[in-house]
Length: 449
Image (tube, rainbow, N blue to C red; front, side):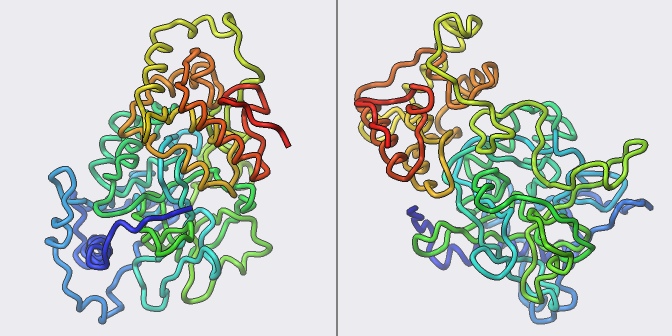
């Protein structure tokens, strides 16, 4: 997968300095952009931002508010979120990546690109490097770049104050009012790359590559970990398929997103930490620590269209839809608008991107992320309006299906592109949607293996 370099070294230095400045100013001055919150006495675990006070070499560096205000966004400086977002009566700020209820706290979004740091930590392919002895406030985590797809944002871990306040105002304090994709304001902010000034992309959660990385959960004792949710990320040199995310370090109990053989693997040495999060124990009467899963992954109450996890995703259509299969949708004003969205979002020589992306997205595997990036290139929801398409899929509870249900017709060049994408998936050992349910076959249809 090709990862173009968008910034020279001087710009990269400014971006790094901006994030470091926010952390340093918080650690040294205690200024949060809001009135300080003194945690009340609580039985909940206590968390703390790892600061610079024990590192004279770093604290002697001159960082001022001007460094942050030079990277203006929407006319306002980035304001690092230190509010007690998960539980107001305890020390559980946004940068601690806390989950209270994974059913509603995880806000579903669709777009891209975004970064996936859920499997990062140990030295190797995806390390999170830091220096725990020097109380380094930031880990540099190697993470997977996902070009396009469904991703989730923990409403308690939005690092920009303005975006957080907009999101809870619309979605509710726990996210209960935003069960559908791209309802939450934070989705558009990430898709338009306005969450963090200067970042190439943002770290979120996705089920992409879950099968290849053996997603799991291990509860670890209090220690330093990297909280990567909504952290800023920057593309690496070369064609590595990875990015470097600057994740704030925290100290507290946490869960690792993999099943470890024993708790000793929670400690990765002096220069590595896990990218992790913490799911608070249930507070229900009679609930115990062993009565629920510790997994820090979304568990939505309804299926999510286009999600790569079959346990969460709405299914593909079983066959091409018939006229009476969806009477409330077929011929509706919503379907008319969905077809307009498919035809109006184009790239290159009038390739209608929505059709092509649907052909690749819902059958994709981790080894063809570059193919998904090619198929979905130009389909950013911040540029192309996908509201009706997403609404049709949510109502019908199916994945990559809106064009079929609404009878939307692609142009000739788009049909050819769909055929090429299908053949590319076959060549990669993947069964395209055309060979599963007879839809999105393009022209001419591919020949099966």
